Image (cartoon, rainbow, N blue to C red; front, side, top):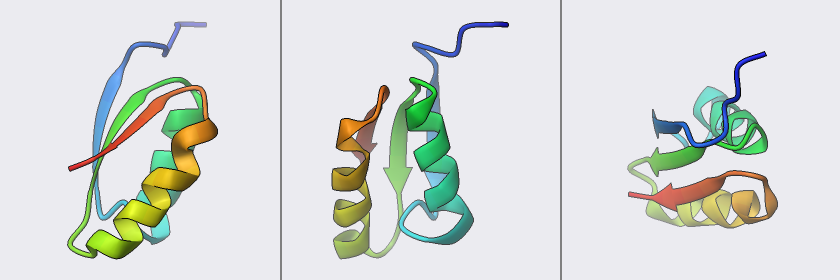
Amino acid sequence: MVSQTGQVALVTGAASGIGQALSSELCRRGHTVILADNDSARLARVTGQLAGFAGTAVAA
């Protein structure tokens, strides 16, 4: 299997729904995920939730 650690992904709509689920899965797999959404409060909450995963989450 190809290593996914060190990969970078940009996810729009990351504060809810499919975008949130995708961000979560990518972080679990070790990606650095740049999260974007127009709801900054929800985006901050989701970014905080991803802090304990293998990857890194950054709100943009």
